[in-house]
Length: 552
Ligand code: GLC
Ligand code: CA
View 1 (cartoon, helix red, strand yellow):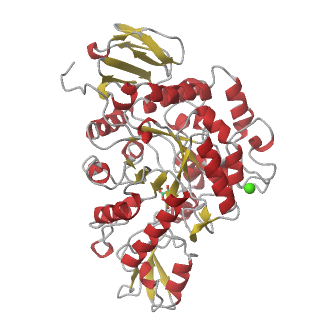
View 2: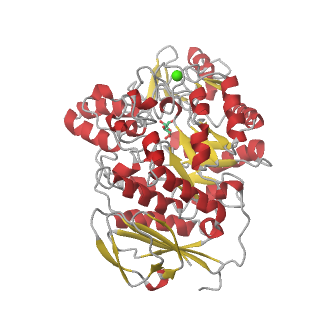
View 3: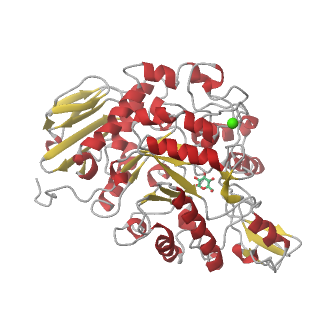
C-alpha cells in the first residue's frame, strides 16, 4: 500500500457522514386532497425518512410562486406558497425534522426571480423604478429584434420585449423567470439578508440553483461561470455562511474538473460541494441534447465519475447522485426497470453511495420508482418539455419522436406522485393529482417495498447506515479498476489498512470477471444483491446487475 495514506481520518463535517434526500414538494404527499403535495404532507412522512437514516432533506422550492416552473420562479422569497402551506407549517416541519436528527436544506433560486415578484413588476413598469436595475435590460438590435440570438433554456428567445419601455429583459430560462442583475450591490444585499433570515430560522443550508450563472457578462456573451462568479460567491459566504455550521451545494451544468476547486476548495470560502452533470450529459446527443438520448456507455460514464473522484481526492468534496427532479429515474436510465428492477436499483445505489462524497437520494429512488410512459403531449406538465415541444414541432420533428425522447429523458419522469401504496393515486392524494400517477404503483410502492425483507428500502437503509460507522466509506482513498471493461464498474476504498472492494455488473447478462490484483479482498461481505461472497479473488461469475461489497 502506498505510504501516502493518511494514518488517521481527516476532519469530518456532519455532512460528510450524512446522506441527503431530495423532496419535490408538489409530488411528495398531499395532506388536503387538492392534488398538490404540501408541507404538512412532508411532515406526516418524516418517520419514513428517519427510518431510512438520512441526515438532511434538500427541499425543492416552497416559496410563494406562480409555479410556471413549479417554484423555480419565486415571487416572494420570505413567504410559503399557499398551496404548500404557511410559514407556521414550515416551522413545524423544521422542528419535527430536527427532532428526528434531520436538517432542512432550502433551495436558493437567485439567478432569476418570477416575473410576478414585486421587484420585477415595478421594474417593468418604469425605468425609474428603484428595482429596475435589479434585472438585465438591453435596447433592441438595430432591426428592432432581440439584442442577441441567445435561446432560452425552455425554448424561444432568451430576450423578452416590454413595449412600454422599449427594452428587452433577459429571461435565460423563460419569460416567466427574469434574470437578476447580480452587478447591482443593492440586489446582492437583498439576497444576503434573505438568506440570513432563513438561516436564522434554523435551516441546515442551501442548495443553490444554477449558481454558476450569477457571474455572467451578458455583453461579452458569457453566461456560465462568468468573470464575477467567484467574487460574488466569496462575498455571499462572508455575508451569510461564515461561522455557521451549514452545508451548501451549488448546481452547475458547466463546472468541469478544471473549475471544480474554485467553488469548493478548502481555502476558497465559497461552497462545500457542487452538483456537476458531466456523467449525465455524457448520455446526451451532442446536437439534440437530452431529447435524443444516446445508448448508455459504461466506459464513458466511469471515466467521468473516476475523474471527479481523482480531482477532489484531497481537496473539495464530491456530491454523489444519479437522480433529481430534472432527470429521468435512475433505474430506468442506468439499470433495468423490468425483470431486474430490484437488483439493478440496489446495484446503482451501492456504486453511488460508496464513492467518496455525500450521496443524495431522490424521492422514490429508495423504492426503485421508474420512468412513466405518457402517450400524449397533454399528459406532460413540465415547462421545459412543453417549450421544447413547440420548438420541435416548428422544426418538423414528429410528435411521436418528441414524446419518445421526453419519456426517456424528460423531467416529468421524476415528478409523478410519490408511490406510497397500491391504493387510489398511490396514496399520494385523495383528490386528483396535478400530474398523472404512474400506473405501476399497484406493484411499486412504499408499503409493499418496506414489507419485503429483500426490498430496496431496507437495502438503502443498510447502505446509509454503513457510512455512519465506517471511516473508510467517508475518507478512504478511491481507486478505480477495470476502467476499460464495458460491463463492470469496480473500485476500492482504502484507509488505515482497511480496504473496501466494490464490484458491479451493469448488464442484464451473467458474465465472468477476473478480479484485478489490487482489488483482491477477503473478510466480510457488507452488501450483496444475490448471495454473499466473503472472498473477492480470481475469476468470479457476476449475475445480471450483481453487486458485491467486501471489506477486509
Ligand atoms: C435548475 C433547476 C430546474 C429549474 C432551473 C431554473 O436547473 O434544478 O428545475 O427549472 O434551474 O430554475
Ligand atoms: Ca395539498
